[in-house]
Amino acid sequence: MRVNINETEPQAFKAMYALEGYLATVQLSKIQKELIKIRASQINGCAFCIDMHTKDALKYGETTQRIFLLNAWHETQLFTEEEKAILAITEEITLIANKGLSDETYAKAEQFFDRNQIAQIIMAVVTINAWNRIAVSTQLEPAS
Image 1 (spheres, helix red, strand yellow):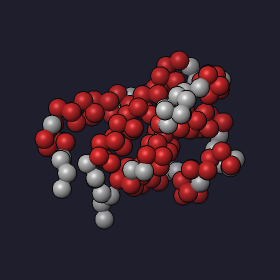
Image 2 (cartoon, rainbow, N blue to C red):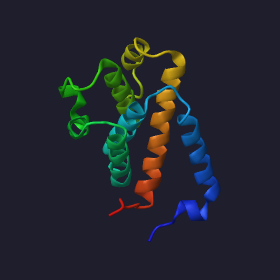
Image 3 (cartoon, rainbow, N blue to C red):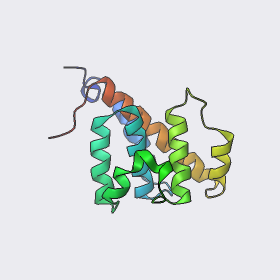
């Protein structure tokens, strides 16, 4: 069994929970935040987080069809232009080694979001990527 960081280094989890506390206050909707969490978790292969956040998204009113098609959002009209901008930011930051957040994607986001909202989206993506790395590195399993 791998290290349980929450037990071994509780201050680290306290810092992560502080980020979650901040994200609870931002202008993004619960659905927007869950789309970010699910998509980043899909890219990172984090079963624990995919399981948790798809359940949360359903609880907040997201549809199963949109969740099923989230990894192919480019190919469907089920997502709004605002959501597509959020998902593009999510993918580019999560896959930062490819090219990072491109000027094109950033400019597209500016059509829908102000600077504060863009900062909030970026922080939401950064936070779920940190959680994904904790869960994958410590081999957290989805609850049965």
